[in-house]
Image (cartoon, rainbow, N blue to C red; front, side, top):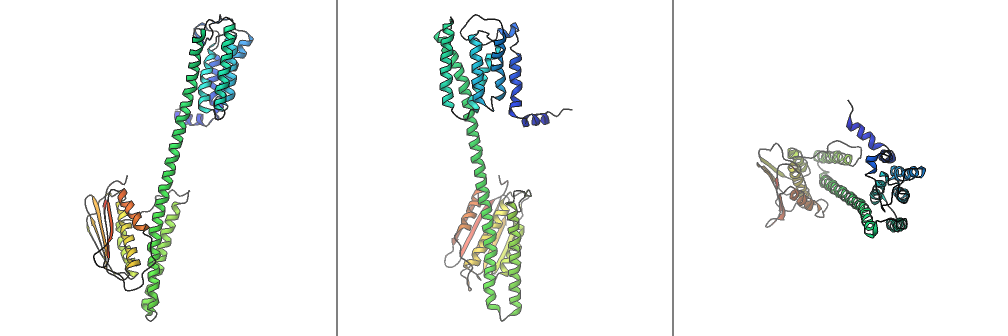
Length: 385
């Protein structure tokens, strides 16, 4: 069986001139001296018709064959077709090939790139010359008839110009959509990079700072250095996954964290010297969209801030799985007893608020009365779209 889809694909891959040639040949063949077709010929000037001769063949060729290049060289096509049309009407052959003028005008309106106004002026002037020549030959068309035909030609050009404008608008819309998609993807990757680097590096800095006070306790120092090594390996693994997404040849699905990985995150934070109490209740829903990934990032960013600003203070993490939402609350008792990690610029919390808001949830991060701070998030579950 013939695959029509394959044939259509092969046809679209052919040069545009080859694809436009059949129309030109079909219109030329339609100019054969058949009475039925002669009744449907284009007549301007209402001059008495004359039989075909050698010049009629030239006129038909000028009108029809240039249609093969109507998209590649629209200006040349329009000029040749107009010349053939003028010969056709002045000699009163009145062939069906006159239809080619409307096709050439439509194509020029769509595809002509430069000197469009010049083309309009020159074409209008040429039409006036043709009308005068037909009038001097005894045409009974009258001014009204010539104006009507001119308006019809203008309509063909206008239709092409409208198509051109519509295509330009569509191209611009697609460009803006692609740019918006790229910006969104860059923002997403920047957010992921911030979360990964900030958390792991903060944990490593805090662990390294704490190791300075453990020189007299070799066992604890070895454990602290092992924790730093483990954190560095995790950071490298996460960064490698993220950098793979930037590879244009990468087609695998991106890895997203979930609340199922929270115990490992809590344990890593504890090894950095932060006392963390973790509770999780409720039943995890089967389909949560992007809610679990956002919940994980909320806990990760809150623990990172606890390491930075309240290292050594008691931190409580509570995750509740409801039927339609995940509720997360992270509270820190107060300032730490040892130096904190590197300071932040608030970008992480702002990014979390955006992520939660996109899913239709609520996010808050504020200081508590007295010492400490609390981060809360309510994240609806369901299809992320």
